[in-house]
Amino acid sequence: MKLFTYYQYEKVRKGERELKIGIDKIGFYTPQYYVDMNKLAVARNVEPEKFTIGIGQDEMAVAPITQDPVTLAANAALQILDDEAREKIDFVMFGTESGIDHSKSAGVYVHQLLGLKPNARTIELKQACYGATAAIQLAKGHIALNPESKVLVLASDIARYGINTPGEVTQGAGAVALIISADPRIMVLDDASAYLTKDIMDFWRPTYSDVAFVDGKYSNEQYLEFFGHVWDEYKEKTGLTIADFEAICYHLPYTKMGLKALRTILDEGSVDVQERLKENYQISTLYSRKVGNIYTASLYLSLLSLLEQKELEAGSRIGLFSYGSGAVGEFFSGILQPNYRDFLKIDHHTNLFNNRTELSVSKYEEIFEESLPTDGSSVDLDTTNDPAPICLTGIKEHMRQYTNKNK
Ligand code: COA
Image 1 (tube, protein in one colour):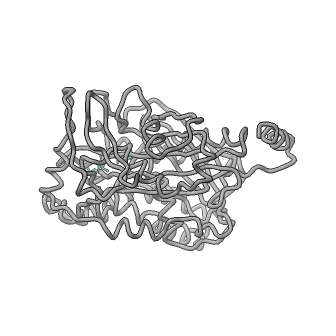
Image 2 (cartoon, rainbow, N blue to C red; image 1 turned 45 degrees about the horizontal axis):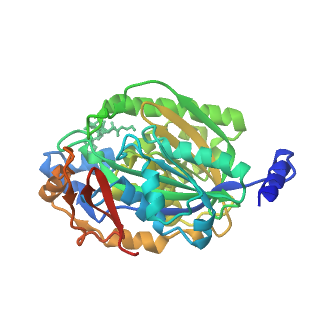
Image 3 (cartoon, helix red, strand yellow; image 1 turned 45 degrees about the vertical axis):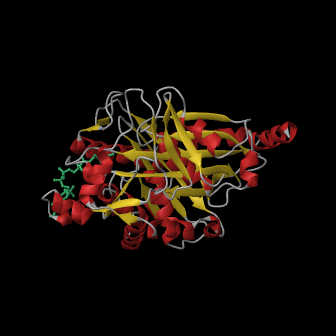
């Protein structure tokens, strides 16, 4: 196996064989509860159109106490794992900004819950909403050196700004799991990429706080500035233009944000190109409109929405803009593969949305205020009402306890 890998690597190094690396599978999970944004607006004494048009959110996913970033990620990954993936995954990367431990990677819990093989690396990555993009780029390097391997990238977050705050309407909960491999069946990722880091305080969460601090207007401005910078640099590096893109997917803290960024570049294209990008943008926002912000997973939920809600031609190039406050931004792209829709879990995700339960605003507030003990005491949680296969069952002697009901 090692010789074969090295041989392949040598051929790639000498340019004799093009090693295609990218997204082989995409899984998604969001918890069973949601709040209607029209009703939240009424409760907050705001015109509903501000939330549904001005911000661009229809529903907001709410996690019960029995779902945390670990269980959300594990539930998202469960549906994309087959025997081959279990055998070949030797690297698990968990991008999150709502991690559960300052030391232990959330990925290690997921690795165990999914029954992955022990001969694997597992780490957690943090840079606000950018963590999973960093993981994907690192995964590409790992696959280039080990073409037979597969990497599991997890992006999982519960976005909490607080009740009756300006950010409340942009909360959400969910996870996306991606398998990155050679000869991927969904999307080959292009090698070129443009990225930027700048030390700014637009959004952060000190270790003593369970809600984020945010300068919302500043973060909107910086998002646009980062997009402009990496978009220009990407075009310079690749020679591509806006017309080369079938669609551009954005990190979506709320769906109006990506639209603001798209509008800054639309006049670079013909009327046809503008119409195509605007239409595909709307399709890429359909899932986020129902889920809200899921931080690290938001960009990939936008990609999933586009791929599952429209049949695009194989060979189409999709642009991806990732932004993580603090801040790091990156623009990269990928090419859709033949029959890519056969490898998506469209029915599974349709059922997931159809089986959700709406919460009244007061019930949502009650669930939002429920919290796990922070004084070191133990707790047992009742998971009978949680339909997710993988749930948090409590805390014992400072250790979170999980169950996989399918086992
Ligand atoms: N009908 C339609 N649109 C309306 C409206 C109405 N009745 N009332 C207001 N709006 C529009 C506003 O014009 C504005 O649109 P614009 O941004 O295109 O100008 C939008 O709704 C939001 O209104 P605004 O007054 O700016 O909202 P806000 O002060 O409550 O804050 C955020 C909005 C996004 C800054 C706030 O939700 C936030 O802090 N979110 C978290 C931070 C974040 O997500 N950052 C993103 C970068 S990662």
